[in-house]
Image (cartoon, rainbow, N blue to C red; front, side, top):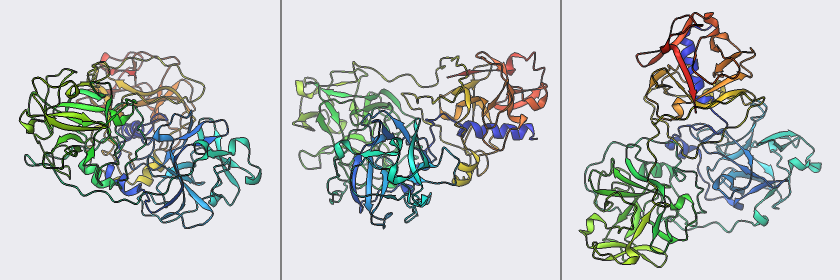
Length: 606
């Protein structure tokens, strides 16, 4: 039986990893860039195509539902929506496919390969994994990712080569699973069609990225901004899908992650907002239209489409703006700053560039990216500070350009409006969330991810994780009945239980639980499980750990229908110990579980 101290650690581990189906993880951008490399030498039969089930739904992925480098991502079955999450490449030859007559099925969004691993738990054997089969991206070719393929769009079964022709990928509820089959007589739920109308991919683009030239540097570099949950090219604050990129740049993911860092300390007047021209069109970017690290991207004028390519943050203070009364205009998608560089060729002087003005992301503040701003949504001119009030950004055809102007009396085509109806940024996520009264369901129900993604705070622990050991130790119980999913647990004084995922051991056990100000981050989210693989005792709940089997050191009395404040009294304490906030740490203290004191009560809030 585990001690209370160990219990607290296991509880912490559960909070980090036992999340809803659409769980959010903190992506390590450098590790992901190494693990999920796009093969630009590959031959693609289809590019960015949908893969549809026999009933017309689409294979879909959530890039933040796997591990820290976007491995172990499950594949969902969802209504087709045209988003990048539902786009796939079919590769018939390349670095990770040297087998004629076979194909890799690769997510166009994450570059991970569809993978069948019969060693994993039933129901979790079909996943995305680094192409080549090694978690760090160092693999070559593996038959767990190869599927016989004759070049047609289907309908066709997806039969993993390592199954020796005995397994078909199969629609199982809302998930892509596997089942035994005869591939020559596959069932209806084992047939798939590739591409809208079966369109094959165009020939691969062979052009090289343009050379970079950095705008002026104003001062010394700041400390690097923390890596956030957003991936390099899909970081909108809201859930708008990205439009299809038409540029030809071959990105260096590690260099891009370094150059285009989001400033999570910044003050934003607007977040993920459109910026409209006077005739109602939107400023838009193509993340592949610049160089290898997403600098030098031109800004286009396009019909508004609601995509993340047309979303912008307006930053009034932060690492790259220490000038009151001025703002940075930052692409929410790539994190690059709108920049005016008069040294460049005419027609190419208004671009996105790494905030701070250095190509590698090490810049601090530069007046080529600052624009006078009074806090209003406009209409207002965009006047670069380095133009000394003599230049306004101006639409010219389909591009955002510049021309001389009187900033106090700009022309109509030099005026812009920020935001749909002038909506300002929402307040920070530290405000108290709404309490929920969710009743236990007879089966586990996926919880939709929030429309606004809150980044996890940067870990301060020093643990060096073993990803394979973590994946094995911290498995989510998808069969469980959850009374609450993805909720905060608040102490009597309104603070939240919180964990640092790097504060434990190499597999995320032994993590202490702290008590601190609520911030809405994934570090402060819990599931409450009333029935499942690790809870077979009625009237109790897990605050979840996936380590081991059922143990009463992880069970808490939890009457059916509970929605209010309750004590957390471990069953193995026989009602004599209550969890309590002790100087910012979750600890245990002697108590009467039937009559707890106010500071021993906790509530569950969404």
